[in-house]
Length: 465
Image 1 (tube, rainbow, N blue to C red):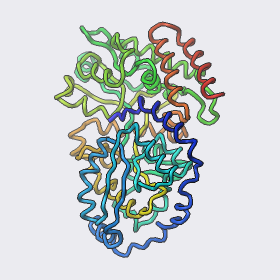
Image 2: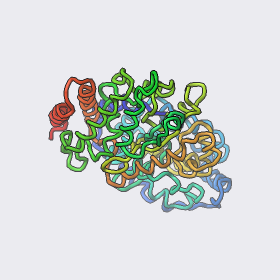
Image 3: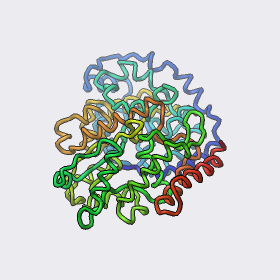
Image 4: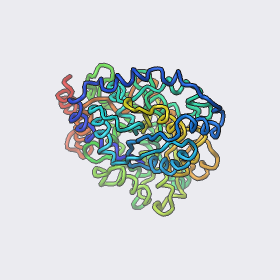
């Protein structure tokens, strides 16, 4: 799935700049006021205990209404589209899809909002946009909808959604603005055959991770210790972030906004990343997630650390030479404890929607625990604890239990109030400059300390701190 998040973050920042001047953040407030308490006042008018009974009740109330959706091209979207016919038959609600490339989605949604057009009822929202959408009231708070048992029956089971997604990508100011639909974290894949051959155990700590990378590097002809993304710019910054929080580092203090590139913990993380990649293929400085994956699946590396969404490709016999020789473990614990990446998508209600309850019925049906297995089997990305523990699905993808463990580690950051992606309007510039200097340190153009100092200076200029 990987989402092309890193290359698109720069585009997203530019798009925000284009539309933010047109928005006062108050659009749709009148509509929101008119519908305030709408969910609380709704009466079921029938049984909702089972999916079938709920469908009958919804059909009696909303049959014939049409809802319009603005979604990105994505495996989850494709799976939801496969389920749409059954939803329409069950509820009588008509669904009109508008699917576009991720790079255009945010701009289209914000232009619709600032122009008060109200073209859409359900929005696909990146977790990285949620604070902006919540602050500008682009999307409707969902707490009242979720708390209404008539609108959200027990079989939906909100609490079954993985806590990291529930708490980390769908809220703003402690209010719920989205239902998570897809996401990912990062974890380690390792060659079980090599580890067994040399009597080694997979890494539990960052120190062990580095030690193992050094051990396997050159141990056999054409074998390297590790493969990771490290291309100069955003990809190198992303690679650093994969380990940075485990050392207690960060690009900036997320409470004060002060740049922290020269903080000893950030410098330690950068030094670790540079030292680790000395045990990677010689061309690692050109690697995005694709090249890093290819190096591992072609048998060139003993370990790999990247997105959980790529696990299916590692385990696919048609694309991986090591599909039957791989084990998985969470991102190793560092001096500052456990941490892991977190990113994902949500379904949200447009604040301008005139059909909020019909739109909410769509969200409930598509994202319910009752339909979660159908969604995943149709190509969707799991977000529910029950799915990660489903025996049939685990047999098909043995990485599921480790993915869930890694997501629990991601929730550690969430509980600390830290966003894995630093929330800043100039994020694209920040990632690009940090990645530039990290890469320079990796290739020996400067020391890690020099790279940290230069990053500090440039980021202070960028953020104005």
